Image (spheres, rainbow, N blue to C red):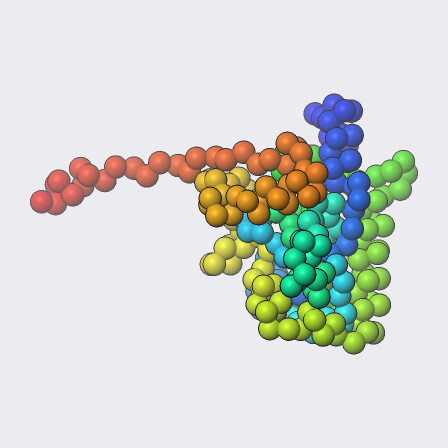
Length: 231
């Protein structure tokens, strides 16, 4: 346990992370070199919103992201068009810790724990425990059992639809060059994204503990003198 945190802070972090914790699913066809970027223990930020489903069937893609989250907003409850996917959405600028990488029958399952923005240092040095019980080991066991069970099921037809596949085709936390986003956001959300972000925060009773600080990018050095010498 990291004793840089007070007991009250630890309690707040654990309540945010564990209260209402639920499993969600997202399947993507990703190449092996992209899947290999995820390593157990790694903590990263997703700059984008993350669409996930409340159910899954047999894994037909190369990779399944399985999320343990207490803050996935059930948007399908307010939009009948996405009810067939039981779509939940995790907010932009969310943080995840890779708890497990499980391979089965040529497929890979990446197990991500959704953690609050202001507790990344806590989770770098802490394993979740309840008394003598290692909660992370228990979560991993349930996630693996989930894939074992679902590989015996048929695929979920709704999650094979082209629109859902398109929504979920990109890897979590990676930019267009398949590199991880910086740990801290460098710009505010675009104005058109703010209403959805605010709605998700309200629907999930999110708190200031999950508000990432924006860090200004390094200033670009003035190269004017170089050009003056050239001309």
